[in-house]
Amino acid sequence: MAFLVEFIKHPRTIGAVAPSGKSLSLKMMEPIDFLSANVIVEYGPGPGSFTKELVGRRQEGTTLILIDQNKNFCEQLEKRFGEEQDVYVIHGSAEDVNRYLKEYGFDHADFIISGLPFTSLPKSVSSNILEATKKALGEKGQFSTFQYSLVKKSFFEEHFEITDILHEKKNLPPAHILVMRNKRD
Image (cartoon, rainbow, N blue to C red; front, side):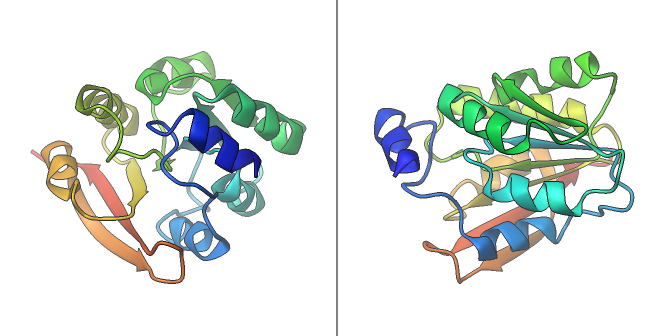
């Protein structure tokens, strides 16, 4: 119910009326190599559906940085995960991911996953986030985001090389997970 209230208050920044389901959370974990990940960033974790899986699967010493613009969600995340070692909740914008990485002593993220509603965000904000993400990934990082349609696929291709598209039909609505890396020259 709290998620629905936040959606009603902020429909452009919260892209669904309910948190992501367990099947989508599990599917979002598939592209992540938890054995090699030193830093994982999550954009728009909301109440923590993906975060729960990240915390449970990461290796000891892996840093998890959670970035959400919604203050209420940040408070919920702090309550759920604030006591976890190397988990940092940031009330801020994914556009500033590089500043946050630097603040915690990192020059890049190994994996970035996103629950942001790119179809409803203003194009300029989406572009700023994707440009910041490109820099944050460095040469080897990977970016995954889920979308309910592939209408923005060409927009993502302007910024990244799509290496895979996973589908989760059990989620309501069904979702597509775009797995991306920086384009190679």
